Length: 325
Image (cartoon, rainbow, N blue to C red):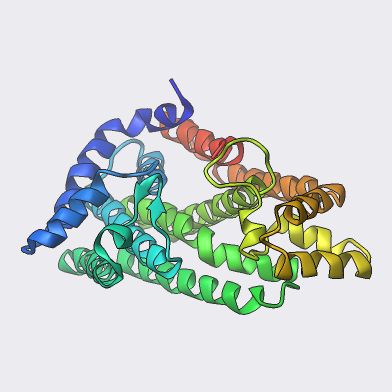
């Protein structure tokens, strides 16, 4: 059994029912929309986000979930899907997870409208059932994701961002959504604000580790989801690179920044930048930071009683660090 199947084991029934409810939550009277949402449902990814919702809820409740848990999972997945559809338009991307993106098949205008539709469906699902507490968690996440993306765009042009700004960007851009999943799962079964906040923080720390792992992929030679050096070609600031730039001579720094800004299409030069980052211990440093976030996350749940759900969450944290793509 692979690790994702193992993680899913204690929530198999919930995940199956969730898929049905998720598909129903997208239904429309417009045939074109239904064709597109059917396509979306059938090319699902690892489904990490709903898994976090259900595992958190079951760990806190001793194994039971309710309709609010399902709605929380559906809303977060609707809104997450909306942001992905919009991202593909913004990035002019034709592929997602090996499938054609919505904009590649149906053009940008339709993709933007589908993203808007999914967003509104998510909001209405909460409002129709009076889940304003859940809606608040999700709306804060959407706001932060937008701010994180814009902060990255604003700072990336200068290529001299500090580690602190980098953490702020990834906290908003990546970690906030996983944090929302864990907070939602907790809130759907518990009124204990301390518990909800603990789980939100747990999700945030995993999200930080998750993003650093993604950064590290840019420097590996193994065949993974994205070609090596793509972040360098796109002039994205990653933690290994930030560390290397902050720990080198001025001459090396200007060579490196010049390489990224003006020679990012030159394969040999990109390889040299990757080697430079490795030589400056950028990868080692990022790995240490990732492990630190991982340990902090695990420490937050260690006092919860033992259960299959807690075991799966621990597996999930380790999977984030050890995944190959």
